[in-house]
Length: 301
Image (cartoon, rainbow, N blue to C red; front, side, top):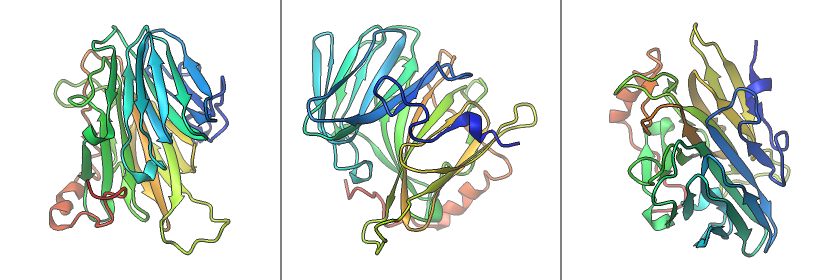
């Protein structure tokens, strides 16, 4: 039986408090991560209250200002998520924050994770120029990863976040992998949010009524079953509470973007994964293949 109804949330189905997307502990079975995303007109603001959640503000398109208890950062955005990395801002737990749009309309996402302590520094602005961009995989498994919110790049208590861009026709989050058990040095227990956007590949002779679409797969173990195969469009969310996840598939003609937010109950902030043993061998084939020359999609860095 498909679990799409529980773990797949199309745009608008989890809207709340002015956000088009609002994923947090209000969703049954969700504990450690959150995501808020939506549009703001020029000068419009959204607020998030202080509490046990730390946040990372990620402009999706346009420029925003982030303010929290006297700290302030202007996040120079981008034309779209496909145009390259963006400035981000980190705000520790117990600090309210306000996001305000400059020239509108602006689209912004705020990643959230339950934090055990107020991390220091409690406010940080990371410019786009300091975001490491990794070209991962090879051949049709090539993708671009923007590691703005991972350990070693962004100081935080628990949140781990990144952006992944997959050119049309390629697969990412592949081989399928999982991170739902605490195994020292091998695997960390992390729930994960996938927030998607899709575009017609630049230069395509697409009709005005094209319907950009991608696909996401999640499946479980015998002990912890889950079965998700989702058709995704811009603004859709897939939640991964446990299990193998991947591939995320970019259909021919359509580039795929997703924002990942991860956190878990463990004391160690680390992204340690294990591949599905039925498919992990695929990594060995990359040694003889080139990275897709279309990457990085936002231009050379």
